[in-house]
Image 1 (spheres, helix red, strand yellow):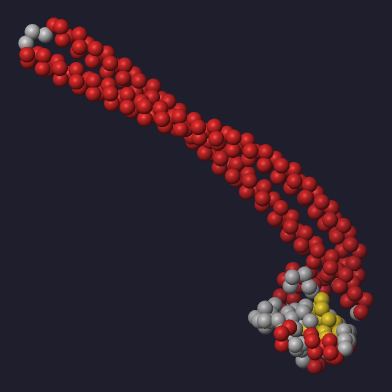
Image 2 (image 1 turned 90 degrees about the horizontal axis):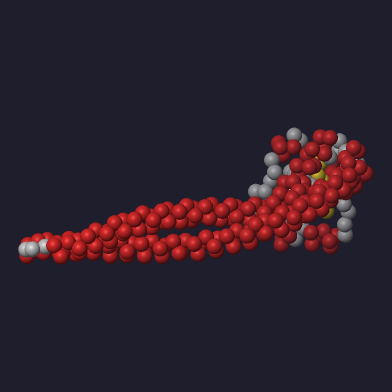
Length: 265
């Protein structure tokens, strides 16, 4: 069993590193995804502003036609002034001229307002184009960076897999399955020594008979509190005292207990 414990300790280092690298690999694309999302939002905004610009241009074109009609209408009324013969005709025609002039002025104001909006949209679109160019470059750089890092991480995983494959054939499949789950659930630590009567994984004191069974090393024993695989390790008394000091006891260790039913013990 001692040889198996040594192999498990070596495997623990490999698996812990492998899981860390796998987590890093999951996180790497997130930065790129964020930049792509920002770029896509910018493109959507760009299209929306261009649609608004086209609408404004069409509005201005339509209003200019109405303005031309209003100018012609006013000019016609003004020409008729030379033909009137009565005061009543003069007053009626004067009112028509004033109404046409007012309509013409209002249309000019509307055109000016629309042209200001058009000018602002053009400026915003130009700014958005510059921003998209910058974002596209950032996405390209991030893509290349991600591919380089992923390639390095995958090479690292391949090496760890080779190291893992050298060890796992000598370990019982059921034990290996439980061990891998413990490593994932317990921050990369799946096998720990007992010092005196204390599990060094969760710092909980274990029953004397249980400790004796671990000391015999005839079978795999799992901590009833943290579920880690245990082996016995002799240490000096003063070291033991330090290991089981009140300040070292893991807060809420029992609350952190992994259900042993998960491991089919």
